[in-house]
Length: 326
Image 1 (cartoon, one colour):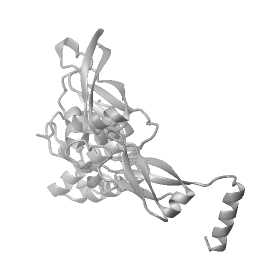
Image 2 (cartoon, one colour):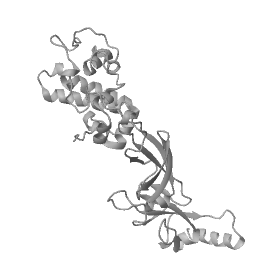
Image 3 (cartoon, one colour):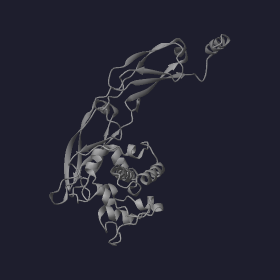
Image 4 (cartoon, one colour):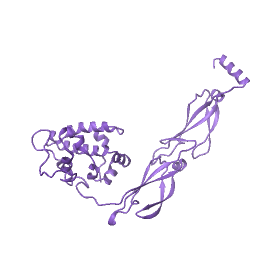
C-alpha cells in the first residue's frame, strides 16, 4: 500500500503557494539536500528524492490539480514515477548549478529517454571533485512501484458534467446519464451524495474508454455542477439569504417568516434596534456535510427598507424623531 505523502509539507510551502514560491523553495532544498553535499547520508538522499518528486508534481498545473483532487496515495496509484517526472524540466530549474535535462533524465529513465547523448559516462558533479551524482543511485531501477517498469496500457479516462439543483445537492440524488465510450452508448445510474458541492469530481472506476487489447478500461469522472438558487447562496456548508424589513420594524423589532431549503418556513424574531446588514443564525439549517461532518447553518441577512419618498404624515413623524435625537 502506498504511503501518503504531503508534497506541500515536503517542500515547506502553503497549499496556495505560487509557482515562483515553489521554484524558489525547491532550488533552496535541492541545494541543501543534494547527495554530493551529504555524502553517505541516506536520509538526505531520501529527502532529495522526495523534494524532486514533490516539485515535479506541484510545478505542473495539471498534475497539481490531480494531486489536490485525489490526494497523494490515489495520485501515485494512477501515476508511475516515470509519469510523475514526465515533462519535469530539472535542467531549466537547476541549470545554474551545471545540470542539463538530458543528463539528469538519462540517469533516471535510462540513456536516450529524452534524447540524451549516449556518452557512456556519468554527469560530472558541479558540487566538487569526486564521483558525480546520478539520479539512478537515489531512485533505483525498481525502488518505487512502477518506476523504471513499463506500466500496462489502459483505456483513456473520460470526463463529463452532471447538473443538479441545490435541493438535490442537499438531499442527495440518483441521476441517469448516457454517454459514448469505445464506440458504444451506455446509460449509467449515478448516485450523487448529499452535501456535494459545485465542481466536485465523482469517479466511476472502469467506466471510461476500453483499454487496447483487453487491458483495463479507464475511469469516468463526473464534474458536478450545482445550479444557482433564486434565494440561497452557498458558502461551504452554510446557506445565506436576505430578508427585507421596514425601518419601523428594525427600530421596534418584529417577527418575520424565513424560507428554508428543505424544511417548512420558520418564524424568526428580529430584536429591536437591529442594524442593517445584521445576520440571524439558524442552526443546522444549512447544507449537510459529505461524510460524517455536522451540517452547516443558515444565515439571514437583514436589509432595512428606506422609502425614497415620504407622505406628509411620514415626514412629520420623521421630523419629530429627529427632534428626539433619532
